[in-house]
Amino acid sequence: MNDPTFITDRMLGKLTTWLRIFGYDVVYIGDLKIEGDEDTYLLNNYKDRILLTKDRELHRRAMKEGRKSILIKSNDVAEQLMELKDLVEFQPAMDRCSVCNTLLRKPNEHEIKDFLEREGIKEDLAEKYELWYCERCKKLYWMGGHWKNMIKFLERLKE
Ligand SMILES: [Zn+2]
Image 1 (cartoon, protein in one colour):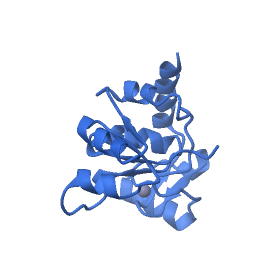
Image 2: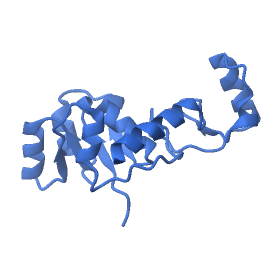
Image 3: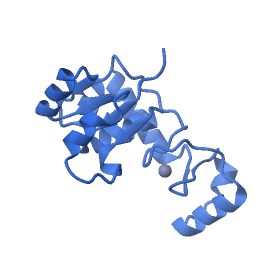
Image 4: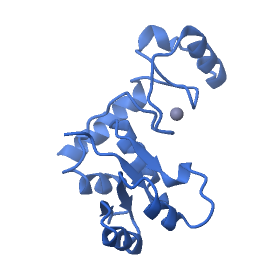
């Protein structure tokens, strides 16, 4: 089975980030520069993606048009993830930027140096961790403290 792809409404920024951490391809409406009505845009674009929305009316319109749509009920991101548990696997994958959805690649030395300088990080990350890079955000990813907290959060979720 191919992984599902998604488009999310403006209310679902945190959920978007998590789905990208799991490696899912998610277009977030807040990342796009939409002129005019966002609901209309969501209904008329990216039709091959599953629409995730908090908006009951938008969900109803999408279903009426035969669109795949899921109405997210909770306001809490952990509960929102549980609402999708039959569809997505809660397994972090270091392959997609959680900020912008771009696929990650290995950084070169220049990119590592540039990032560390910009962020004021003194630690030699390349020495300690395997690194991944988002070309678009010019951002490095590694499995550090933040990653460990994420794993803990997910383990609680699976209990
Ligand atoms: Zn990025």
